[in-house]
Amino acid sequence: MSILSVILPTEMDEYILKRLREDSRHVLERARIEGDIIHPGFKGRLRELLIHDLLLPWLPPYVSCGTGTIIDGTKALDRKHTQDDIIIYDKSLVPPIFASEHAPEGVFLYNGVLIRIEVKSRLNKAELEQFVESCKEVMSLTLAVPKTWVSRPITGTMNMLLAYESDLRGPDADSDYLRVIEAMRQHNLDPGSGAISAVCIPGRGLWKPVVGGKWQKLRLTEAENHLAWFVAVVSNTCFIQHVDRQGRNPALSIDGGIGNYIPADESVWESVG
Image 1 (tube, rainbow, N blue to C red):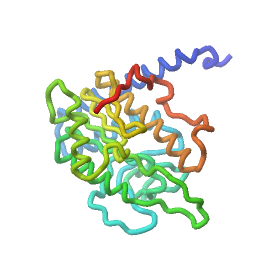
Image 2 (spheres, helix red, strand yellow):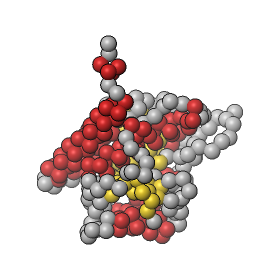
Image 3 (cartoon, rainbow, N blue to C red):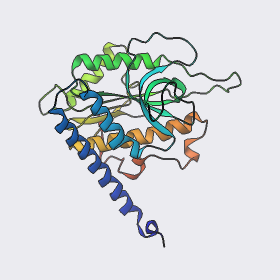
Image 4 (cartoon, rainbow, N blue to C red):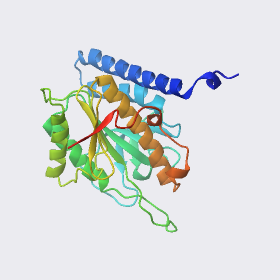
């Protein structure tokens, strides 16, 4: 008898959540320790910790992570922000250009990029505005499709933000969320448009938009929970984007991310704003 056959679903769900939390605690502690050594490559190290110790183990096998630049597949576009911290791309759709799993820095076609994550060591107003500007740039990119393609709506690359710390202080962690909303409005981005798909600041909060233009925040307040559920959001988004870009109906598929195995209802999420 297989060992998996004697594990009840609830026990597996509990195991997955414990693993996510433990992996998140490990990454946060490593970031704290290595942050004591200030050097030019610290941000790159934060990115590596997130990719190798937390994201890749929980992402579908057909995706990988790189860093570099996302380009339009149909026209030349002069991007002001040409360095995207973490690019999660679908290897089953199109290959990366000048990049591989052994040399992950390169150029990535928009068709294959599912998620773009900006990583900040300590978020401030200037960095937030730069992130919002880069989101607008990515939203202006277009998919390259064959002439025989039957036109249908396709969700573009998802933009997410992870900051290990915030320069805001005080007990009201929603001040970080409100600053994001204000920055979006100042740059003529509708906060309910999905232009930003998740904002995670471990120890401060995790926020994401939902259908209808509203936002939700994670009720749980611990830093490891914020990061664990952020990984779950990333994982689920990869599966949904993959199915959508293949032209399949997600409602008819059993594809799913790790977020399907941890609570995702009102017991952990609440409306904000």
